[in-house]
Image (cartoon, rainbow, N blue to C red):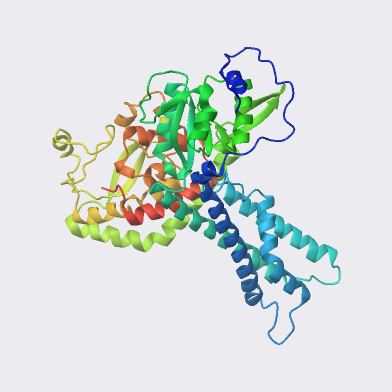
Length: 507
């Protein structure tokens, strides 16, 4: 980077900078090998090779399994040419299909749901292509058994998703141990940099590790990250730290022209540039770039949980609740008998909770405490509170019965809420149903939790449950309300099963 370029970056917004007389015809040389070898971003190459190998292996094995299961090739006959071609070419064709759907882009690997969507899109496209080739091109008879097709594509989709999930779990475990990160230099105003660094460190599975900061103010940061220079020195600091990425916080003190110049110089350095839009807790599917008047405008969609989506979720909730009640009826009966035999009290605990739009409803749970638990609550509240400041909780609550401890350990006391879901008072997935006195303490942001039906499980359930602070619980609930999707609901249900088995935060 030249001194003139440094000076250009350092110019205040609105200043006119003379362009160079002639841009070089050849791109400047990349950094020396000593700089590149220290980059932690090299882990992504190995990870990408593992993903490619896993997809190719899944395709080969699934084709072989589909041939056997569908009985497409009797053992006494020779292998037909179409099936032989599919067996040999399936790894390359499947990898090419996933690549065409952007399934191997490094920005998606290990984070978000885009690589899963790419696998699903590749499956649908190949299914449509095979149907066209088999039933439209060849008019006499289909070259592929329809049983072969019906077995192959669902099996290919499931195994590929499982393979990617396994690789992602391994990657996330490595990141929790401090490995497999992209080294990042964070740029912006002091307060913005501190907030962004805190958010990045809260959830390390995203793979961005802040190593240095370039800020507009001389004061040191409060997040523990070293301040190495000004915003104008970003490129030098990125080179010094062998950064894989530069993250620009909002507000950054850089205007559009300066950001463009920064992207040019980082490109010559081989470093990625990420710009934070400054909008908190809004995930990618709601954000898109909208071009207008030679500008790139950030378009934020309305939350999806309304209209047809709300009807879809309600239908799914009630059908799932009805099925769950039917399948778990024997479990309900056993738990009811154990509670009744223990002390002869009522089987169900009924409590008024606040539902959608602030309406009250009666929530059902299996009783896990002694019959006079509510009368003894006032005496316990003055002693201690292991809750989050708004919700009262005790780790060793003397009111909980031995049967109740087991029910709480595995969240079996929550099962009667399936009846609430079937009635329409609750959802399978949603924010935790609050008490009326909790709602009375809500601030302006917390009231937004009441825009949707409370859930039998939710992000709070799979992220620590009672171990969470009030601010963390509120942040998770608001994230769910603003970013709902059926895919998110299914992910939460999957993670709920793991959280219930582990019993994390249940007391």
